[in-house]
Length: 272
Image 1 (cartoon, rainbow, N blue to C red):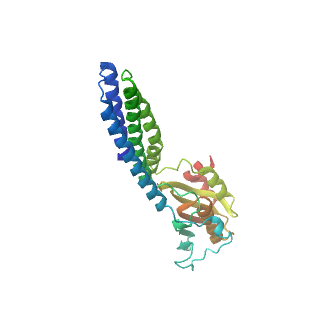
Image 2: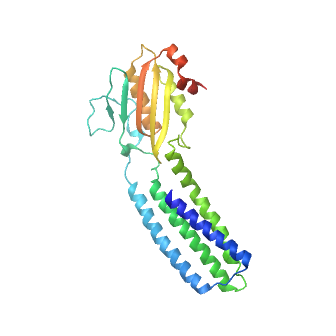
Image 3: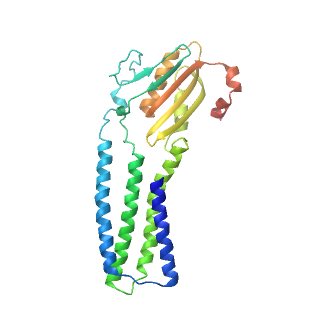
């Protein structure tokens, strides 16, 4: 957030100064100095951008497993060791299990590191502003009467900077508020859980993001009393992990009781 606020503050200051120059018609510009400074800024930001891009690629070069690598009928036994692909912690008599899957098993598009993205946007903002100065200085160098090109370029490239940083700002705010990620198919997940054999109702379903690309899912399912709870837990866990890429998930199962379901506020909200 700080990085984005710095970018927006710099952009606001540049726009404010450009407006003052247009109002006061103060167009004294040293085109040569602008060209040198802007060129240095463009080169410097390109170098930093390449470094950040390489860091981002190296940081996501691992994790070549996919859900297709794991058979649908895979055994989710508590006896699985530390070196196996999936581990389940604590399946008790109450029908509660906490399932944590190693992040390296994911075979979806690697999630962006929000810090790398913010830093990249910062560099991109500086780069765009430098390009704007370079374009304005070049126009003024070609024709000294085109001094209005400098504030005009400032306005245009400032809008470009804001446009490139809005998505990062939105993602950061959504993560801080621990809301359902905008690109997460919540209703589809709810429908898939209901289709699991033995599931009568969803008692509770919470989805939120710890950070961009790391989704946590908490599901509380009401199951037919004569159905095997552990089978439902395993199938729900596979669904959350391999289809919805849950970084961490909790699946709780209890016998279906229509009286409890009738007075449960969480259940009522899910039924709508």
